Image 1 (cartoon, one colour):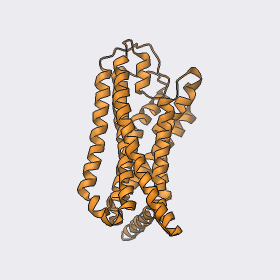
Image 2 (cartoon, helix red, strand yellow):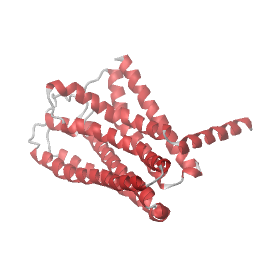
Image 3 (tube, one colour):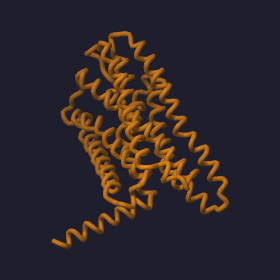
Image 4 (cartoon, helix red, strand yellow):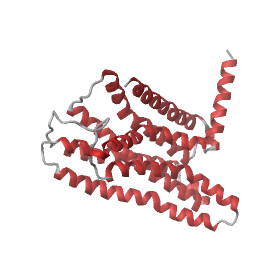
Length: 292
């Protein structure tokens, strides 16, 4: 169990450090003051928060060997987990729109993706996430729970709470399908439809170098999108069974801990601007230390 604690602790610390570094670079480096990196900084902040909802409690349980959590604490964890997950879905959609404008309408990019538009899109992302989570949480409060029941996961989530309720969760499940299904399908379409137009625009570029350069600006985002949705599909859409519990827990950990660590690595390792900004920050730090 100590080995598991150290493993999760290292992942959590690396997640905080890498995402904080991206936020710092975007805030301090003038060359990164554009819509693409504005949304990337929001994604980094979301990933830090997303991981912080589950990791600290998981680490506490591993240290204390505690296997219990109060119902209010569980519902609170569900509220923040859902709000951040939904916010990330809509943020990835906003980033798709940003790439669409940058590639399909490059001459109007700065006009369309103005600072005001970016702030409004980011604000909408957070408002929608918190609002949808609040709806699910309010419906959770109508349920009563069997306190002796067990949750087969490292943290609380809606499906697990529905499994231990002593009240019929039919209304809650309907709300999940109506709100989650409607908004989920909408945000998935908003994420992937821009890439239809992006691909069509890239194919029209005659230069092979131009095609590769245009597509390279999208590969990091597409990689993050596929990893994020792949984890969610396995967790929520694959039928649960006794044989699938361990795999479900594994993908839950990947979604909650591994993905927030992978996202900054995917963006930074494939991004020349970020690496140059990191080198400039390191150079300025060395100059500052040398002045004392």
